[in-house]
Length: 278
Image (tube, rainbow, N blue to C red; front, side, top):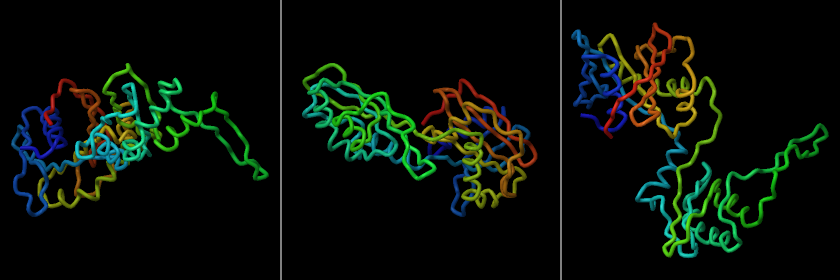
């Protein structure tokens, strides 16, 4: 029994890593117990708590685009003559896009504009005397029509498709901004220690594992795990937690796993051919 996808991922990952083991869901958690008993093949048992790491803003905007209750990703057009595919920025207000995109994109069609990409903006810096200096001029000047798309709708990409009698505007998911550095994934793990240490602290088992599933919308830690090796250092764990796992899905049946313990440094492995049901 698993309540959500993160728990399904945890069960499948740990049972793959420890052959012959079984992740048994703890049904009674009325006193704040952990999520699973990990029963090893040799008869020993460990406590496992499962959680997930999200980027709050990205998760909220994703929900505001794709949730059926919010309207879903399709806007049924009245003014546009073409189907469009558009991508909001991470700071966009999806309600404004639903309200105005049809009319604004129709204006572009009428002027023969059927696509746009990320907009270059002038870059300025303050000089030694307090004067403002232009340091980078975009290659092209954004027209008034495109400026509305950029500034009011906060769209970073749009492309018109073939004309149709029933035009639709389809919103794509955002591409999260932000740099990727060698600390993103470790910070994501450490942020989950305090909210989960008490549950594991209630266990009398020698091993107490915290497994964190990194959501793909949390692009900083996710990209870090995909592109980099973990640091060659021992995780700084509170005493209630003896082992920590970071797991991210990078393909339909492929997962990247970082793991460490109170006496072993971080390590990395890749699991392939692992099917996880939602």
